Length: 67
Image (cartoon, rainbow, N blue to C red; front, side, top):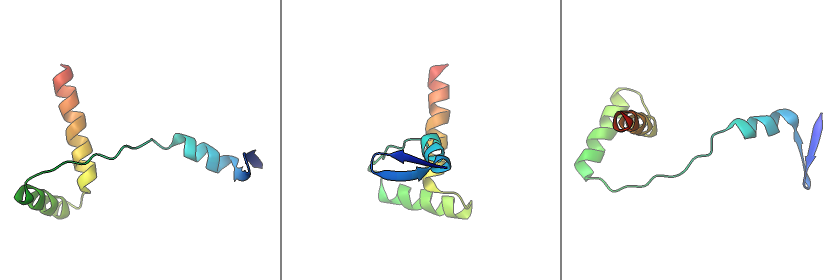
């Protein structure tokens, strides 16, 4: 089944999928070069994305500060 949105046709599954995606904001910061290198190397060792680790740290910090 096709659904017309404006001038474009989209499948219902695509529309629903797009609605479920979280909206992301870009976070930029300046950190010491050595700290960045060490963080990046540790993420590589653990086969984790730097973004994944930063988001986890922010969530943990928010939980701590709310208590």
